[in-house]
Amino acid sequence: MRPRHRPLAKRVALQLLEWYPRPWRARYSSEMRALLEEMPVGWPQTVNVAATAVREWLSPRALGWPARTAAGRIVTARGWMFLAGAMLVDALARLLATKISGAGVTDEHPLRYVVYALTLLTMIRMFSVPTFRSEKSRTRQWLGAVRKWRQPLTLGEIWFCAAMILPFQVLRYLGDPDEYALREFFSSFGPFINLFLVWSFSNHLRLVSLHTRRLQRVEASRQKSWRPKWVDPGEDSDAGIVQ
Amino acid sequence: MAKRPNDSLSALGRFSEAGFNILVALADGPKHGYAMMLDIEQMTGTRPGPGTLYAAISRLDERRWIEPLPSPDRRRPYRLTPAGRQVLRARVAALRNVTRVAQARLADV
Image (cartoon, rainbow over all chains, first blue to last red; front, side, top):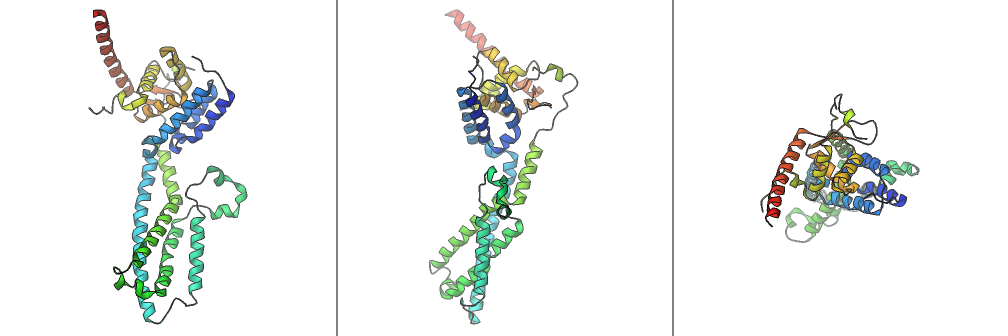
């Protein structure tokens, strides 16, 4: 049965195409848009488009595309790397704090303001990169300098952010060396709270690094290589296409 | 429960019927989405939804049972691959068996 044509339903259906998973859109969006523009679209067809979008998201295919797999491996490896790195830096900070406090330096040292300022700047940079960004916010021109500031972190910046744990933690241990010294590691709750802070920091950094430029390049290149290589249709193929 | 073989249309789950219809529609030559839709409507009396059609197309394409052809516009035609033709033949043979048994049993009644 020929569906009743409803212009509003067609507009909604075309909008709904934006709801499909990104790899799906990269591959099929333009031809499905052409189909919807060509055929009469009523509300049942629009509901069908919406329901299939939900199904595509629920399907393991939405996560299992080659681009996602390649990027996912990097994200997982990076998560472990951050956590291990943060723990290492934390242990180093304990040792440094013990040595420095032995030399008579306290957390009242004037250099602490430099450390606080750098840590604050690092935090602002980290939190200025939202984990999930809309297409609109990415292309908004008026943001100007802010837009540049909101660009994905480079690997160098991520390493800098991770390294900023060290001076900050050293200052914290200098404030209360007895509680956080290595010999007290298992005898009080302080270190465990501290480990939680380290874990939170590294986990946030990992989430932020989902938008590193390298990761975006991996996704882009894998998606490009996944796209089908057009086969030569031969001389007689076009003649058989039903219009 | 026996595991469904990955090389049969049943592996497409809820899209197996739509997938079968698409393979049949492409059996006589390449077609783009809308032409497939009209052909399926003519065969079955029901027009598949655009979402269902493309969900099935993407699954068939992923399994290399159909393949896209280059197109000057956005309407991309697809054609059946040899593997797709083999899957279609197997499905038609299975259906033929079921039909024969059903006809025989109905004749007995």
